Amino acid sequence: MSIDGVTLLSRLPKVRGRLEPNASLAEFTWFRVGGPAEVLFSPADETDLAGFLKGTPPDIPVYPIGVGSNLLVRDGGVKGVVIRLGRGFSGLSAEPNHRLRAGAAVLDVRAARFAAEHGIDALTFLRGIPGTIGGALRMNGGAYGGETKDVLAEARAVDRSGNIIVLSNADMHYSYRHCGAPDDVIFTEALFQGRPGDPATIAAAMDKITESRETTQPVKTRTGGSTFKNPPGQKSWQLIDKAGMRGFAIGPARVSEMHCNFLINEGGATAAQIEELGETARRRVKETSGIDLEWEIKRIGEARR
Image (cartoon, rainbow, N blue to C red; front, top):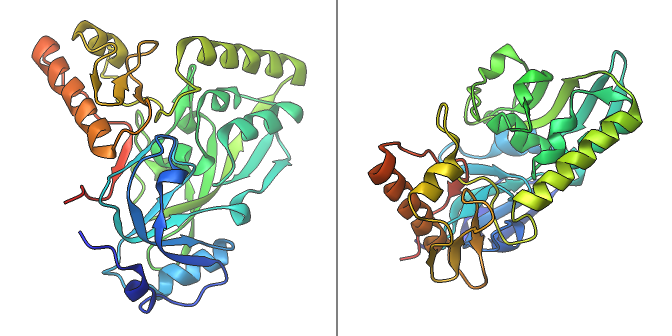
């Protein structure tokens, strides 16, 4: 695949944010791997994003990303436009009736802490998700007994035609780690419905989540979070462990010894090696248990030729 962002720029509308051709994406992913984006767009705000999508020819693909905590960018890079939401989507506010409004670029842990400070309970689980609010909306992110569908009142988004829309919880058609909203909408904001709580009690619960994550997950390594969704009634890490994959490596890409549902870049791994490691784990689990593991990590782009 040939990446030629300069040529693509000539087909894109004027924006107030930043358009960068042939932009590295590896630095934006927790794995620290992957090829460039043909064009990387950082919109100034929701209006800028809407204008861009309205003025961009429909044959040009667009891919929104957050902080890259659950993302694998393939080595050949991404054709089209990668959209990374930043400061213009980082608003946080407490609203009446124990509600929290959060921009799509807000880190889940920051939203959880803000909610705790304002006595808003039920959002504690967000402390256990290493991503952004936008990612939680798109994947029905969840952890430690809670998930997005339990607390979402409504979400704001921009569709591929540049229309700003508001979706109710029912409009999201949530199921386990899945959102049934149209694939082409880019979420910009969420309104969560919490319940009254004591800030100190909520903070203590979040401390327990922090301790649990640090003692059971390789959070201080180059990883992409949970690799596979848990099959009904099963735990992916247990299936991977039973398949003999704990610590298995392909080059510098390794299945975590601490938690088998995490893949690690030990330094210098390629996206191809990480993806091959994941597919090897899937194949071994299928051979040993008959179960097909489904990727939870989002993979975009094309392989290097």
